[in-house]
Length: 277
Ligand SMILES: NC(=O)c1ccc[n+]([C@@H]2O[C@H](COP(=O)([O-])OP(=O)(O)OC[C@H]3O[C@@H](n4cnc5c(N)ncnc54)[C@H](O)[C@@H]3O)[C@@H](O)[C@H]2O)c1
Image (cartoon, rainbow, N blue to C red):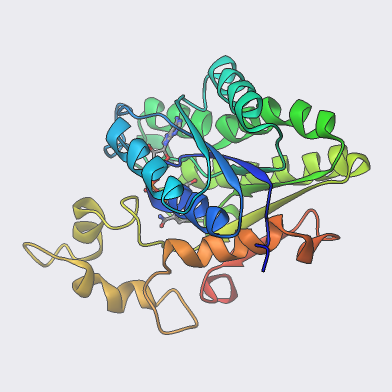
């Protein structure tokens, strides 16, 4: 039986690990070839990023599914680098159908008057302008293909509601919704759909890290996932503390395959009901 995205090519940012890698694997399982990029070096003030080895591991995992993959190290803040990566990927793989802007960072926060300017600037540059750049690098290929396409921009529950101490992240993720709506209107005539996913906590290094465990449980010396679960669960309607990357990938798979052929301009929460509370 053919896969749900059989023969299509997907360009994915932040594919070295976490959700981006999961999207690459889920789409490859359903028949897509992949153009994958990641920054592969650290960003000052942010948690460690994926490495070149991580990106190579994503490539191995996709190839093990008998799909092709082209990888490049590129920073989503660098439009020329993104263009070069997509151009090369399309040349090698022959087409482009799907674009997933998953790359993002969570930088040190704090009340706005106390937040470091660098935290604000880097977060907006990567999480908002980087998403816009990703679309800009890919749009000419989607239009030239003449077959339509599907773009999914990763926002967050923070794209719809406030989180104290996170004005940089929340502003960028609200901005992603603005980019999504604008592009949906601009690209509709080409049969290119543009949507957004809004995950709650996801089991990736951005959420599962020592700093966050300590923020949730300052009363414990060495808190771990089990210690934060009851608190993390309180933000959800369903009794869980976080979702798995594949839960977001499955939502994205729906948005990029023909089952959603007339769905454009939506925000799809994968949030265990967080936005209801
Ligand atoms: N993990 C969560 O709890 C959570 C919740 C809601 C939304 N999100 C969003 O989901 C997306 C994916 O995050 P994740 O959970 O996979 O985290 P992650 O930290 O595991 O992965 C993020 C990836 O993006 C890459 N990246 C960061 N800056 C980059 C840049 N400038 N250029 C290219 N690549 C870059 C990193 O190297 C890493 O591989 C992000 O946009 C994040 O904001 C995450």
